[in-house]
Image (cartoon, rainbow, N blue to C red; front, side):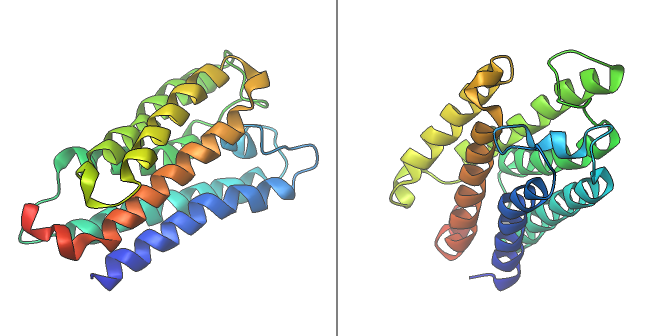
Length: 196
């Protein structure tokens, strides 16, 4: 087991799952049914704290990907796994550069348009990475985790337009699912190294 890769992956997963809940609990009127990006939206209270958290999440995910890539040497990491996980990490960083408007509406300012488009493309990287992580029979329950990852992402896309579908909860489920898949994969690296 590569302790550095596992430690960074677990820390990245913990930050990904807990920081939005903690930050959201500090903002009056904010609900976990809202998008996570709304915490860093223009005119949102505590926006700078949320943006710092988003940068931290993105940086730790990129660190986890790099540590995992090194743990696989002399083998190679599947390029789709690597690209997808890096794209997902970048979605948090890009949300700082192009924040959404208050309420993260489906349409809005130029920043909102770029935010919605780029974040959608980058966060889809988690689907690509998660589906490619491990051959299905290697870990019990992996098929279910991969299926719920794809399902949560698809419902999240619909919930972005149908706000009564609680998009924030689907986003959190999607991200939790990806984090669990990634940590399980890294934890199983000693058994997988020969295949890469």
